[in-house]
Length: 169
Image 1 (tube, rainbow, N blue to C red):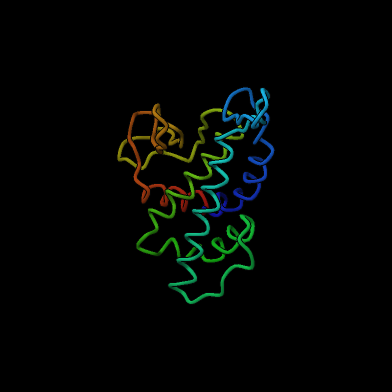
Image 2 (cartoon, rainbow, N blue to C red; image 1 turned 90 degrees about the vertical axis):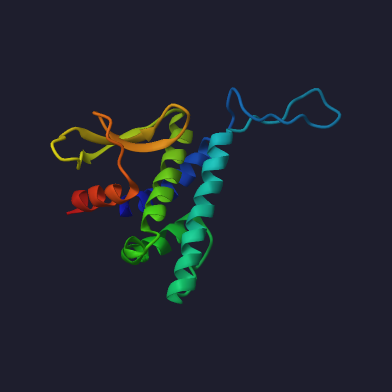
């Protein structure tokens, strides 16, 4: 999870570079002109917005529940660093599954926006008894994010945490 948090500022910057121009996407007509405005990469815009919103939400929860001083700023670098500084507490919190899920989802959305397609990462071996298939994160047909193995076991966010802890040790 710490690796994902450290990657977010870099991905946020990469999404900025991916904002435009693109061959398709939102184009706004300039009033009184036949010319269309700049084409924008909507995926990159959404990924950046979601990243800030998710990090700010978790940072606000930490400040509220731990009575911690707020992060210095509201940039992705500031927010991700602040959240990473409270990672152990967040992973022990009752909302840890939601936290992990949301961080992974914004990371994957940014990767899709930058790379222009689906992404998949190998995370380790399946925790199901008797299954030794590789577990990968990725986007399913229809746009949903999932963590699953090659034989079809879909992992819960709690199982993602366990895989992450095993990989870190």
